[in-house]
Length: 473
Ligand code: NAP
Ligand code: G4F
Image (cartoon, rainbow, N blue to C red; front, side, top):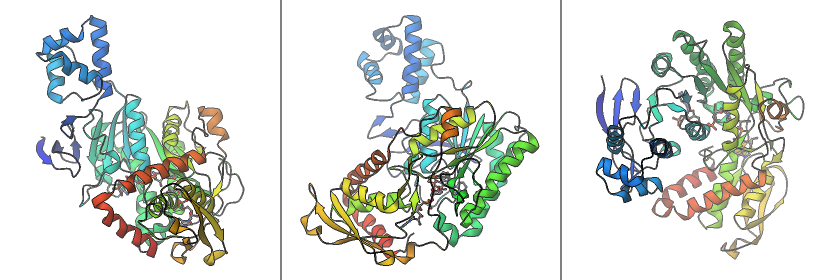
């Protein structure tokens, strides 16, 4: 039975939330600054019904005893429709405006992560009923999906990749058509500090998902996407890398992910399951975790440009990556599961840049022209020119320095993907967002974030100090 509890969120007013076993479905619509959240799906469905039955806005308003302006505001997207209004409309119209029983159901592990949040948006937009697995945490910190909570097609369940029973329960209850297994300890450097945990989640966790699907008797009906990685190529044996390039994992993270890749392949062959790996090269965004190199750079560039940080410390700046935009990559995850047969795909842009180049362009977008001088641990990024509101006092200062703290015991230094197969078989466009646009999107977002930090600035300053000192990697 459901037990209704009230959950308080930092950012929003109170949400009512039904909690059952490990299922937490946000049944009531979220209220933001006194307004309900806009819901395109419901408006679209309501408009279809009105068109079909020739009902005008005024007639609809009369039917539910509301002023016509309320309906206009719903249609203009100025306010969303509350649950009680939906009930009222459905009873007045005598039909469901919103019926999710025929929707395709997707389950996303790692829904709170960068990719999980974009994939949720993408699938909701495609008309899916989206279910996500979240871990219990001592702080309610689900920033990336906060805007989705309350959407009628978005549901959250407690679970953990380290806990088979929770996976069996959620998969058995949701009975998804598609599972996207994105959950992972995804930081390569952290995998050297926590190798056993990384193996448990990134390797055995994949096995647990596959076995849970079998335990629920869904191996013939449920398609599974596994978030694999270019880190498998590791100490690379050829450039660029494609689906036939040999693997040479070069970190505990990559070794764990290699197990995930092979166990997916094994279940595909042994049990005829539709399960595939997307071998994704680095993809970034304004939602990227703050300790991955791109986001660390864009946040620091914004903070330095606005006088809130003195210097950025980095590790190996010569490392090369094929960086794409996460929003473009989630489309490919979906395309892989819509393919006629289960296959693995390399997803990349086919364009490579160094960490140094990323830093150069990021600082440039923030109004700071850098010149790199020296080599190895002595290399520095010196400010040679400033633009716009950036203080001229920065000119001549060393804004980037190298710290040994950010060097890895073994580092992958030459990733460059060949997306030919994904282009040809999935019709995916790897160059929707260019490298320059990606840097611009991230810097602009962080410039705005830093400018708006206000009262919270001190908290971020502490994090920046930690980053500078190498306490947080
Ligand atoms: P991310 O932002 O670090 O998100 C990781 C997600 O996994 C978070 O939602 C996290 O939940 C969840 N998670 C971690 N441990 C878990 C556990 N034991 N049980 C349940 N959930 C757990 O990663 P991302 O960048 O979105 O990447 C998504 C996936 O793609 C990962 O598997 C990553 O290894 C892989 N990948 C990423 C890239 C890339 O460039 N981004 C490239 C190739 C492959 P919390 O919020 O609770 O921590
Ligand atoms: O941004 P990174 O930490 O990403 P990395 O190691 O490539 O891993 C990411 O991409 C993988 C796909 O290839 C994913 F599977 C994985 O989950 C994750 O999303 O580091 C990129 C490069 C590395 O060579 C690193 O040594 O940047 C170099 N780097 C230089 N200075 C730094 C720093 N990396 C970090 N995190 N911090 C630095 O200060």
